[in-house]
Image (cartoon, rainbow, N blue to C red):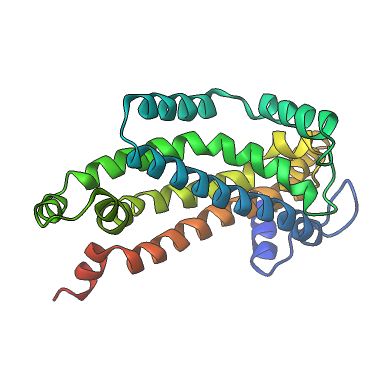
Length: 248
């Protein structure tokens, strides 16, 4: 019955009142979600840009050294824990060079290090996935036809192979963004960012039921919206889906 009352209120935008702060949960989650959402979006875009640049560079210079360097960079990105990478970046760019602030969320300079930590953490998975899908795309029959017509390797890579290779990456990026919205607790704690992850852990530590349920509901909604956005994008960019929709 208690959950039913909470769900009925959540459907109308009323997530209850925080036991710890005495303020409406929806109001508290609003500004915390804006901080987490901004960091997650920038980290996803930065990771995608780094992935695109690294994979295309590897394919443009197909040498054994480039392949080994790519594998080392991708596996190293996956293996490094986010808290360790965050501490290293803080020591280097904040304490040694004094270029960026250590903590807080008052300006764009405060966003650089958290975004870098999250982007580098996701880069390895994205790079391996894109490299695999690109290898599959380069083995397609229309690529063989393009080579037979005399097209160069760069034209084949950027015009014919890469657009098809990016299609399987779209659903993964959507899930990655949703994961970052709910899973940046360590980074938010490390850089003292008042985001959704910190709010969730505070609610759990203080046994704040309404705040905890509200945060979990927002994370579930982010997953649903991200998957819906990925499906809508796929219907626009994947010609196979368009053909299925228009077929009698």
